[in-house]
Image (cartoon, rainbow, N blue to C red):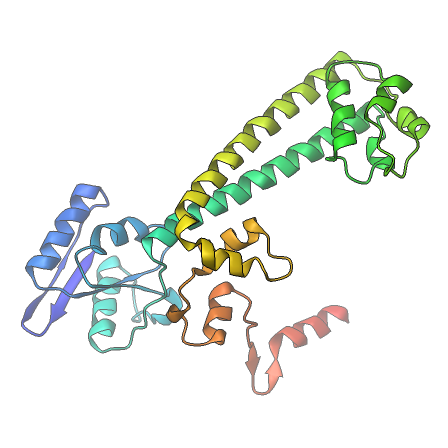
Length: 294
């Protein structure tokens, strides 16, 4: 549902389907009527296709926070909402939300998907540890990092269905390990059945495939950010900021700080600005916490 109004424009409301051809028809209708400002409510991901169709031809496309729009009283309909948003826009009572540039939005899709895949790998590694515990392999009890070189080599041997010997332990043993070779051998001795071997092999395959996707995504992200290498290198000088952290940071808040009038706006956009839920001098969060503790 779309409503147009303004100086020299006849007020009209039309309904359009969400297919690309229908959205294109809506854009042509808006352009034919000389529309320069469009405001729409931010609802899930449904605003994104509309934004993609309009942003290249209409100079001001505003995404408005639904909390900032007080609906008219009475029965709520799409037509009433459309006309109300149009009225608020004409009155200058709407404030656009910050929408990152197209390149940054695409970069954010890549980094967020990469983070999701990294979480998947971590979950698969935990699943592998549960399988090992099921057959009483206590590797996690004697090795601090089960993803380290030694632990990985031992798990690879177990995935082959081998019963480990002291020679196997000594072939991958590292002096920096806190556990002795004998302790490692005892930890790797259990009740490994054919079922466990199959499960370990499947999990290993899943981890390898997912890691391949992560590597491909990292390569794509690097290609997009190659022109900002000088800025990224400066950010890496911050303690704790490695390549991945810097790439995630660039995708989430961008590298153009002119979009944020102050550091407070940046903190609010990043979601680290604490809320103030206070009424009549009482902080509601603290009050509810006190009641809970009673």
